[in-house]
Image 1 (cartoon, helix red, strand yellow):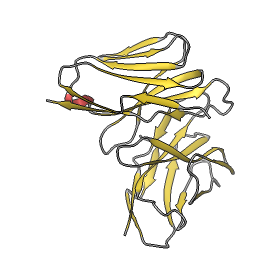
Image 2 (cartoon, rainbow over the protein chains, first blue to last red; image 1 turned 135 degrees about the vertical axis):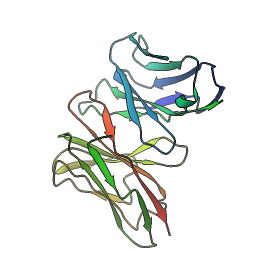
Image 3 (cartoon, rainbow over the protein chains, first blue to last red; image 1 turned 180 degrees about the vertical axis):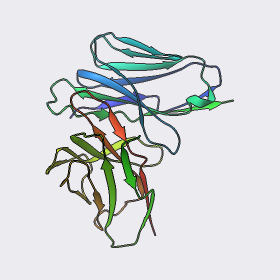
Image 4 (tube, rainbow over the protein chains, first blue to last red; image 1 turned 45 degrees about the horizontal axis):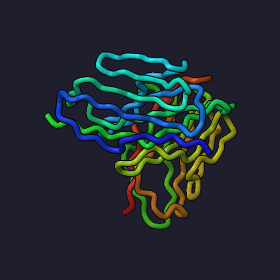
Length: 113
Length: 112
């Protein structure tokens, strides 16, 4: 079955440093979504990418979808303590009639003030 | 998220007991999902339903059961067959096509 892998699993950064998490799928995706889960909370939708090579920005966050639509990345510039949480990618395989999302294992970001 | 309500927030289960977790949504979404999350881990799909009166097993359905008698409701029963039920349970719903999933606040289940 389809697998979505995320690396790294954990990342500690000093406040102000940049952070990147990578998402790789074993199959071509129709779309990729990114979610953020704060400690003790539930996942909250951040953004969706659909087009090959697409890049979207939300303030300090930059999201990319690979040309082959099998990988994606989330980059945070100058991290802040409010960025703490676990970031999940989730993709829908191209051949999936039910639009089922498969979640990656998440990257847990910890920011030292 | 607004629109998805999970209850209770905390639940304790005794040995040999079945417990039911509630999930209600008023977003008029057809699809609903149940996930299990263990500490520091990702989301694992238990069951999902894409339409009323129909549901499918996810990756870890053993020891769990669901029903989908109404569009708004998708309760999850953790049966006594689930030997390691302690986890954070998340319910989600989704609209048509590539819409994002909307999650409830979750239920934390522990063994007494």
